Length: 457
Image 1: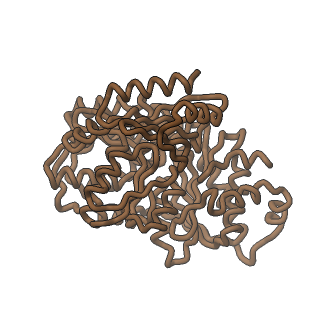
Image 2: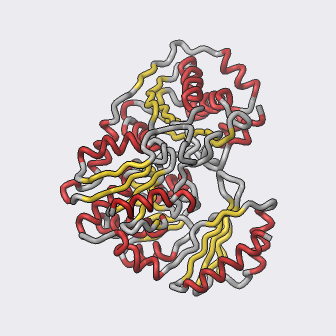
Image 3: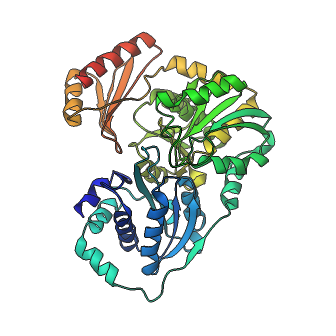
């Protein structure tokens, strides 16, 4: 069972079915979690992947036998598990597991695990210990032989009303003006939530790839990939929509397109939401990841806020959100975290807040973003498969010896006119490159080409 260790990342579990992850490994991990964190009542949810129902069934059966009470959300998004855990902490809910591999290919699955109040379980807060427990055959045999005084209770929750009301209460629906939106759920879990929100909002909604389907008939739901963007962009132009929105499979990330069908990098949305949150919370702390930083730092400083850089990854950002009591945190990969959402990331609140900003100001998304995009052009995240990632990073560091270096996450090197970040992925065997400049598109192309030449040679 040492193979169970290979499916652990820095902040969750991901593996290929059945090579490195299956229902037995999932059950072991769930049992190790409740044992290590002393959880007696918890939430279970799952995404639309074909392997998810059996994984959920096996996990739940193992937990019930140990006397753990289960609140079963069934098919849902990751943030629905977060919401159920933090909103029901007073009722004794002590943790949650979401069965998902997010944007990974169909043959993958995994688990996102949180403790009481939706606090993350990462490599810094118990995930390593859980991994070793799960891989211990002797421990697992003892657990299976042990029987609780009573079987746990199993409550299936069909209503999403509490979660929907929380989303609606986080925005001012009174200022929302009629708009036309293209929404692309990618055959993930976002579609049913859009259908529940739609009656409360004055929007005409054009739906793409709307039904959850683990076969992924339209490809893996990962709008961060350039080849996955055109369907939404084309629909925005065809329908003359005001805004396009797309999600990954478990919809903890959302991606926005302006009225011209132009994909807006998540980096600029971080700045936009930071500005909005500082208007509501003057002087507040805003967290951001180290991949792209200049635009966010400038906006936060102008807004009187305090920018704080933190390591990439939802577990690390949530931990730092609490430590700094940050009102908002954003990653350029389109994860957005909110203090009023249990310090968790939401793929629904960002687009609702942007619609509120557009409605209140009367401005289009292109107008909101054009100036910032010109001031700080970016390469977009570029992935490269390499044989020895650490050696490549070391080689790059040697080639840029006189820049200001930072190792918060991977390698960041900064010069007066440009900076870049190169880091290993926590979930995939690739190196990720991001480059930004101060208003210089030509320099951006030159530096990006130079870096990629070294990385890929």
